Structures are given as C-alpha cells and as structure tokens.
Image (cartoon, rainbow, N blue to C red; front, side, top):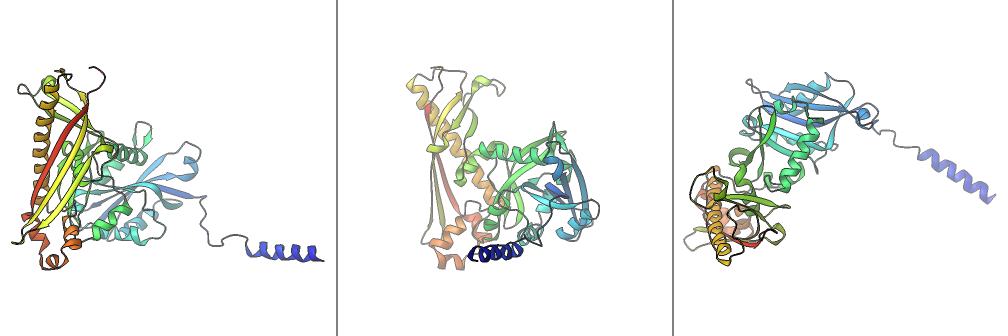
Length: 373
C-alpha cells in the first residue's frame, strides 16, 4: 500500500510538471546577428537587420538576409521588418549594434531605451559601435570572405579591443556611464573603405551625443589613459630626423599591459581651480628598431627619454580633444561627486570641464628588446 501511495503521488507530480505552457518555440526562430540604425531625411529611424536562420546555423550551413524598415520608434521599425520576413526574429546574445554618426549626433538614448526595457533582449555580450556614414551600408555587404557580416563584425571588435585600438564596451556596460552625470563614454568608430570595413578610431560622447573622435593611432594610448587596457598595446614612433618614408627612423614597441601603472588624482584648489594629475608608467618591449645598437646602455636611455617625451605630448593632445568634445570619459566629474560633493553641486560641469587643468605624464621604460641582441 505504501509503494502504491508513492507511485500515485509521483504520477500527480508529473501531471503538474509537464513543462512551461508559455515557452517559446525555437523551431522557426530567425536570429538577428547584427542591427544598424540610421536617421532618414524625414527624421524617421531606419533599422537594418542581418537575419540568420537558426535551424541552418545549427547545421553549419547558415546563410543571411538583410532587411530594412523605418518607423518613428525603434519598436515600430522592428515591426516593419517583422512584417516582411517569415519566422520569429530573435536577437543573438553575442550580436552587434551599429549607429550611424548622424543619428549619434542626436541624443542616442532614445534608440537604446527599448533594448534595455525588453526583458528578452540580450545586453551582456552585445557590442556597440558608431559608423562614419550610413551604418546599414556595412550590413548590406552580407559577408566578408566566407564569414557572415554579423559574425565578422563581432570578431573584428573583439580583436581590436584586445590590442587596445578600441575601448571594450557592451550594451550592458554602456548603460552606467550613459546615465551618469559625472561620467561620459567612448565607443568604437568604424567606416566602410570600399569593400573593407575599417577602424576610424574612437567616437567620443558628451552626455548622450557624439561630439568628436580620436584616430586609430591615438586609440591605444587613450585606452591606457582610461585605465581599462586589454591584452596588449602597440605603438610606432618616429624618433630620428630624416625622411618620413625611411623605416630606419622609426621604432615599434609594445606595452607590457600586465605591468602598466596608472594613477589619477583630482584636486580642487582654494580658488576653485580643478587640477588633474594623470601618471602612466609604461614598461615596453622593442618590436622593431632597424638602427639596432640596443645592446648599448646609452641607446636604451635615449629611447626611454625620447619615447616618454613623445607619449606625454600625445597624451596632452588626447586630453585637449576630450575637452574640446566635452567628453569626460575619464570620469573626473565622478571623482568630484565622490570627494567634493558640495563643490560639485555649485558647478556647471558642461562649462567648467573645458577649464580643468590636466597634467598628463607618460614614463616609458624599455624592459626588453627581443632576441636579436
């Protein structure tokens, strides 16, 4: 009787746990690997999606379709596309979002709001970038070699983040600085060069608007100055007089990122002047130096001095560009909020940020020069 009672109880439990009645079927799912947003001449949102059949991608034979739709909101533009395609569109958790620079010059948050409010929309691994020109044009390329455009874009972003050309940013990590009054942000900046998709540099934001940019060569130093470096950072500097086309006048070196030291200090003086000291200690390895003679102590000391002076000048130019763009991506305002709250309340930060005195200093130290010597 006891066993019969247990069996009856198990049968009742099975009836109650037959599954989620409201779960979504993935049988007809269409994955949106990448999405792009532009603004039309009429002021409407133009959304472009790369859509991949989930069933085909499981078999390794995936193909993609590119569809566009317009609307007065992001949701409406998505619904316009849904009306054109079969199956249910799902957004890939390792996807890519692109915004055209004309759209980004407006307040970018209205084009992101629905993505944060939608509970099923992934955020933690989705990459975000700005495009110089129409963002949708990049997706219409469909493939790069044999790789679908969305997958190519994601891989490209990750590889450029690893060498510090781009700051690492996802849809999830973007939200905090975008809504923080004491912190701005920067995003990867891309463009279409013929049939190639290339890095333009770094897009700078003031508040939620795209206001300026840094070029590709400035990217690695900017990322290090921001304190969020990745695996490696490579630099090329002309340190000898002579022709700019002679490779013997240049040195190529890599930063040992695991040994970088950065110190940021914000001070408010009695006259209310704000001073920011930014010190970077940059241990490097020489990758290319055609003139050689690195075994000589004097040569290393000369390189340390020349590179430190050159990179400090570069850091000063980066700071000038940030201030001209109104981009407080180093979070100076956040430091003031934390350490000088009463002073912050009296500030007009949009005006005062340009008057901050930055004192950057980069100290380069060659700690390795390869195996040649």
